[in-house]
Image (cartoon, rainbow, N blue to C red; front, side):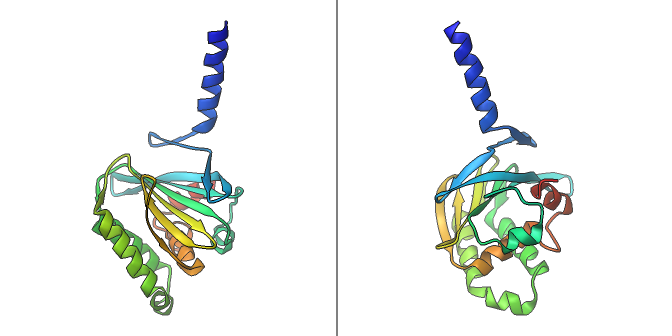
Length: 187
């Protein structure tokens, strides 16, 4: 009887920790960023042509459906990219830059130039990501955006403006993929 109770408890605990799955990727309902517990706002698959690239997940202090409110909010949050296809850093960086450029004027990009160069250095040091790897973009208001791969911090880029530029990749007026935006917003 004791074993059955333990088994049932184990099933409930494991279900609660990973209650959401996208394209075979199990996502946690909550994560910790700094001192803040965050909840999964939404997640979806990024694809290009017929290829699945990554599962993008957005974690916030509380659920939010407004892209503008999320971008403007300067509290802790996380974008997690669960890689499902081999990617070189050049392709990943190119995709990030293309999406950032689509959502910003030349003047805004000029202001972000130094931070975009820092991002390029971080991704170039990573070289490549493979299926199963996880890139996290954690925003910590006092420090900036920490970029990690598989839990190992690769660098931190200061500034709320840079973090807003990153969020616009998925949540901006010209998101990298419309249905991914909708799903990250909880739709």
